[in-house]
Image (cartoon, rainbow, N blue to C red; front, side):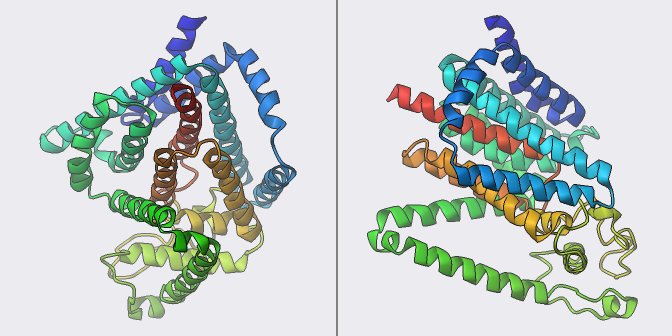
Length: 398
């Protein structure tokens, strides 16, 4: 039984090696590994669940219920119901499986450390492979699509320093910087900058008592400023999409920060959102919205479409596809999950890593991936569960 659990952990850890070459192989090995681990640890899951569910508050149950309710309404009203229901199932599956991994690992320190080590080796190997590909003339189609994987590698590289002390972490970091530069991944750079900035602000609040006393006031001011800036940003995006308006549109937002195509995608998506603001068009359906596949017709975008596959901004995507209600309760759900994890341990190192994880993940999602990408979602919730389980090991060690 112990050996089979170890094999399951190997499958989970090394699944991220498969991600670089084949996303289906990644998903299959990750889910299979987690299911095997769950099967041989059912008693642990049941006992731990009973203990944890007693601590869940009424407002957490209420938020989760509203989240499911409004998400299912959006899927029911979707222009592509099959796609919408499918990604809802995936999302809930990833959350539940990650939660089960957390329950198993907090019960068994050896399993947790073993998984942390395998992940450390897996990402070090990936960093080396990508670097070799970049500096060689070897052509390999799957490896040429690694830009998105660099984002995930960056999060793991930082979080792994909290999870475990391993020489493989340093290998990942050594090759990470040249990989980011050679990949041209703006999302990784943005994620690192935002992650470091938010961590710096948090340290300032902790160290400067005057700021800490007024934290809620300052947070309110920050939210208000963000809303105002978002409104100004929106007003400067393209908002008319007849051929004459597109041809004569003058870009006010610097195109070296946000390229021409993304500005058209975001402007078009927000305009479509205003037509169905309550429940949206349904999850994972944005590229099926009427007019989304038409050529933009601008000299800057060539034959590119208004929404080629997704809006390239997770917040606009969720607003467009689930409406105001779905987006509001989705944000609340992510918030309560992170608050629960935040309260597990008071160490500064833990809190800074959790801040960096969220800052990087969500800020890079502002300019890059669809939130519905299975590997991106699964990685986020798995990382949260690993960090949560590490807090219990940390307490034992102390």
